[in-house]
Image 1 (cartoon, rainbow, N blue to C red):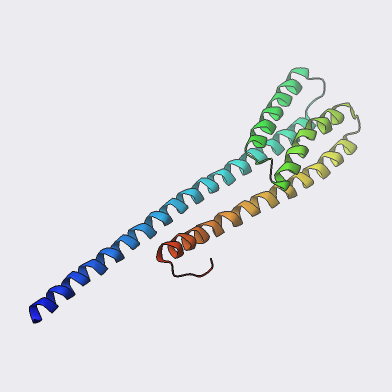
Image 2: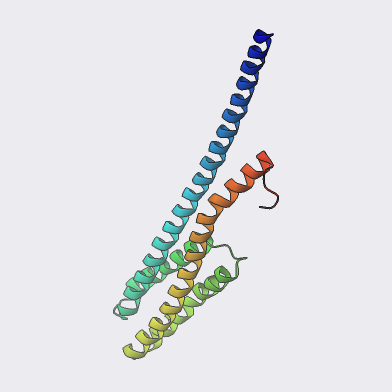
Length: 172
């Protein structure tokens, strides 16, 4: 009788250990997946920051170049258009702030062409600086939302998966 009880306890212990190891492996897999997604999001944030900074620097350069150098003007306009396109493609046009930023970027060429014909450097600089501030504030807002989403998603997804698997939470 003692041998049967001992065998039962050993079998039950092995079963419980297998369940714990399986659950631990599952939780680890979920965490690794979420961390990889977070890594992709962080790379996206860094790429957008870099592209946006490069665009603003190019525009600063553009507003200060000699207006008689048509070749340089054309090259810079092409570079600005490429950067605007690249940045726009990184944004989801169905999110309200992104949609606004895409419109700002699209209108940027209008402001730049307006600055080409404007002979008063003071006025041109003031106009672009105001526009630049609005662009920067909007980009900061978008990047902050994405950063918060990235931080929250790791924990939220992990909690949902674990609770669903273990069926221990009433509401997630």
